Length: 125
Image (cartoon, rainbow, N blue to C red; front, side, top):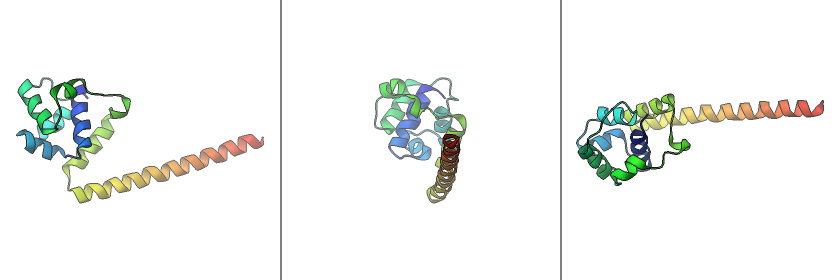
């Protein structure tokens, strides 16, 4: 994923915008916005970046040089999931997100309790 794509995605999520909303605000296609965020667009025209910056209520400079520290960089599967959720009905996306969160939370609880059990067994020895 390109740095600009990461910055666009991050800013869009900060504003709680979908890719479709950004596309409509910038007269770009949703497909183009998605490809841009995934880093599949090799070159972006200054005029296009200016439209995106305006649609995201930020500057071109922040989209180019914005903070892309590790917590904002997502892996392929995370980006794919987010992109898919952005493309479906909001209510359905919320339902799926809740199910994923429940699954992750239950896995963390199981993992944490098994780790504690193993630590307790080790300390008894």
